[in-house]
Image (cartoon, rainbow, N blue to C red; front, top):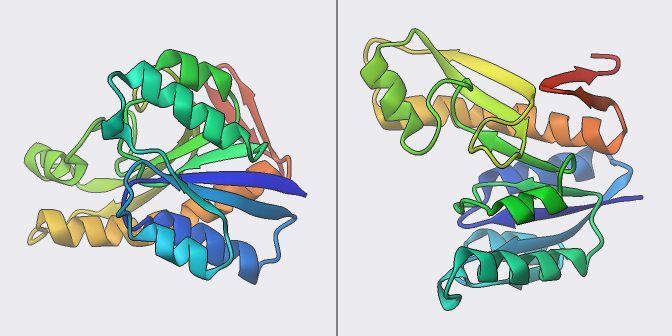
Length: 202
C-alpha cells in the first residue's frame, strides 16, 4: 500500500479530487496526511472529515525559507510517503527540499507549460492572446515550473473569457488529469528519462 502526502495552502480542490477519486476507484494507496502551511486552510476540514490525518507547519513562523522547508520536510517524513503531491501549495521550495523528494513529488500548474510560469497564469494567457490554455502535471525540480511533464489538458480560450471564467474551465480539467497522474505514479506506470516521461499502457 503506497502512501501519499498532500500539501495545500487553501481549499485544496485538487486534493479533494484526488481523495474522492482514490476512494471511488479503490486505489492501492493511502492518503497518509494532508499538510498545510496555513492554519486556516479550508482543505484541512475536508481531509479531517474523511479521516485523513492533518498537520500544519505555519510558514510565517520561520525566519527563512530554509528553516521552514526543514521543518516541513521533518513533518512530511513522519508519514513515510512514497509520493508528495502539491495541491495549491503556494510556496517556492528550496533546492535541498526538492532534492530530498526528487522523482517522488508532483505539482499541477494552471498553464500549458513551458508557457506562463509563475502566478496569474490565466491573465497571462489572456494578455498573450493564445487560443489554447490549460493545465500541466509535472515532477517538481529546482527550476520553478520546469520539471518533466506527466500530463496536460487543453481548453479553448473563448473571445469573451475573463480570468475567472477561464480559470474555472481549466480547474475542471485539473480535477481530471491530476488524480489520473497520481494513480499512474502509485501503480508504477510512470518512468522518467531526462526531461521525458513515459507512461505504461497510456
